[in-house]
Image (spheres, rainbow, N blue to C red):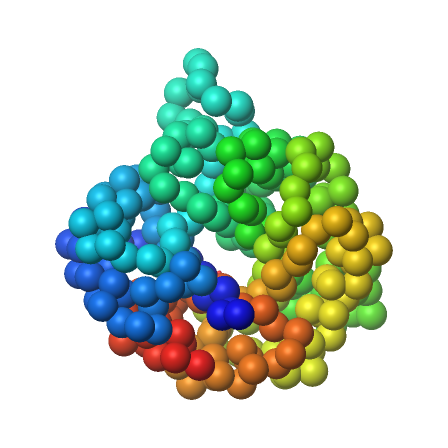
Length: 245
Ligand code: PEP
């Protein structure tokens, strides 16, 4: 089975870039694949879905956020899970350290957002990761397990779960954990799911400074079911080369 490769564009891109990059991804055998997921800004999902239909492309689309409120209502500025589903989102990124830090994402809002998207059959990509100071303490495993415990509060049933280990010290820094460090945490994630959520089929990802140069080593680790790619996903040449792992 192909490994899951998710491009997290964050707050980047334009209509021109979406048209340009998606036409490249539709043509390459490495990216024209449902396991290649493009998390572009939500505002461009409709355009991306139209391009996808026009080109008959098989890659998947992901949202970068969703409202914690259900369906429709008086929540100015919000976009609901059902709207994102209509726009073609198959996955959505949740719990990213940037949103936890800059947007004050609380556990309560994470749980509501996960519930809302699961109700629309959108698969959450739940991100966890420790800061440098926590990594240097003895407690980083407890910290990561505590972050995972958010999933135990989700009420909706689910059978598929994507969890991404994204150490904050590796995001956008060019610093990548050793293979042993990545494997250790992905094993911890899988053991957690087996213990507390045995009904769920888990896909465990690594994210943080993945590039064309290191993707193959990371993606060939047996515990790694895929990667979440930030900066390198903005350059189509680099992203295609990651997908050729
Ligand atoms: C991210 O922020 O999700 C990420 C993986 O970023 P980068 O690849 O740029 O480190």
